Structures are given as C-alpha cells and as structure tokens.
Image (tube, rainbow, N blue to C red; front, side, top):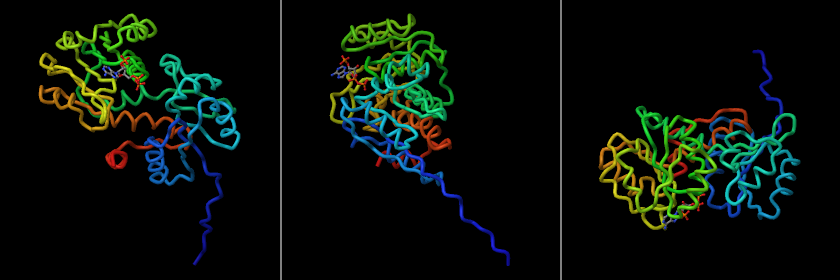
Length: 284
Ligand code: ATR
C-alpha cells in the first residue's frame, strides 16, 4: 500500500484579541473561540485589558508581535480610530472604531461593524421588514444610537425621529449625521408611534440591573418592526409589549454576533456563520 504524507505544512497561528478596560465581561473570546474551532483554524483570540493612557503603545507592540487585528470596546473606540492609517467611511461617520485590521502592506485599517451587525440581525430575522416603508423611531443618543442611525439611513429609511432623555445630545447627533433626523422630546416619544415602521431602543433602559424603559406602546403601528439592542434579558419588557401588540420583534443578541463576522473573516480568512449554536453558547 502506498503511503501518502499527510503532514500539513506548519502555519504560524493567526492571533487576534478584544481590547477594552475593563474586559472580563466581553463575550467576544467565546464567540471567536467557537468560530476558530468550528472552522478548524490554527489561531487564538484573547481578551486584553489596556489602560486608556497606554492604548497606542500597547496596540503597536501587539501588532509588532504578529497580531492580525483587534476588536475594540469601551473606552478605546475613539482612540482606535485615531490610531489607524485608514478609516472606512462607516467608521468615519460613526466616529468610532470597533475593529482594527492589519492589511498586507502593513497599514492599519479602522472599521466599525456595529451598523453592519445591526442590519444583518434585522435582515436575517425578518423576511418582511422594509427600511423604506416609512420613518423610524430611535430611542437613545449614545455611541450605540449613532451606529444605528447610520445603519438605518444607509438602508434607505426616509426619516428618523430621534428621542433622548438629554435632548441636547440628540440634537448634536442629528446635526452631525443627517437632515433626515428630527429630534423629539423624551416626554413625547409615544406621539410619533403611529407613524413609525421601525422602532429601536438604543438606551440602556430595560437591561438587567438598570431601570425599566417606561414606554406606552398602545399606539404602535402593528406593522412596525420593534427591536432592542439589549440582550440581557433576551426578550425585554419593551419587546414583550410590542409582541403583544402584534409587532414583529427582534432581540439584540444577533447584533452582537453579526458585528464580529467582518473582523473574523479579515483576521482568520474564513467567513464564520451566525447560527443557533453560537447564540446558545453566548447566552449561557
Ligand atoms: P452607549 O454607548 O451604549 O450608547 P451611553 O453613551 O452611556 O451608552 O448611552 C446610554 C443611553 O441610554 C443614552 O441615550 C442615555 O440617555 P442620556 O443621553 O440622557 O444619558 C440613555 N439612558 C441611560 N439611563 C437613562 C434613563 N434613566 N432614562 C432615560 N435614558 C437613559
């Protein structure tokens, strides 16, 4: 019998990590570890805590050591943008980067995949949602809301009502992003519900351990798609109320999973799947 040599040539394992401060809470190592195993890729993904004052020097050192790239989380997302040689248009518009990628020529590319993750989550969970059907209502004006506004406008939403407890923050965001955003007072958030075809909670209200989101959905359009960026609990009271009114609802867990896809593909060379196994793993 002929013997074939099945020894694969040695390949240097590829490395990536999530950078934050603190970082212990991050689900990214679980997610990317699962994808590495599932795709039988020789590589590793770490969680690294970096103090803000040492961000640039540490990232430079890690790239020198051979890392292919990083996910970046609070409080480093703006510093990551400043660190990069090139910035994608969506990261530029969002004003923050959650994904750093070393290109073949050595340049560092800063991307922001939050808007992609938000949209991939909606389009994978809903077969009927049409962004162009009518206005959206977005609650919140933090970093997460900014990525959602960019995602909705890029998808063809014609108008967005933006509503935040601190009105000035919503006004600054609207002025920065688009004329198609109309700021409304927090007390009047229910008034535009009949007109909204997409309703998004991008505040931290309703998250486990945070105050509830007091939002009367009596007048919601039953054809509206309602989504919450929160995934703990998996189905918030806000989504339960919307479901009870006949709306299609989408939880926030899928956004977390999908936003990791472009980074993994760039660092490890294989596009990973977002499936039920992954969702169950991340939720445990
Ligand atoms: P992120 O970057 O995740 O968006 P953030 O910048 O802290 O986090 O924003 C949290 C959002 O939740 C903000 O829109 C915040 O409103 P303010 O801008 O008025 O702070 C909103 N939020 C937090 N606690 C709130 C509360 N008790 N009532 C209403 N909105 C609240």
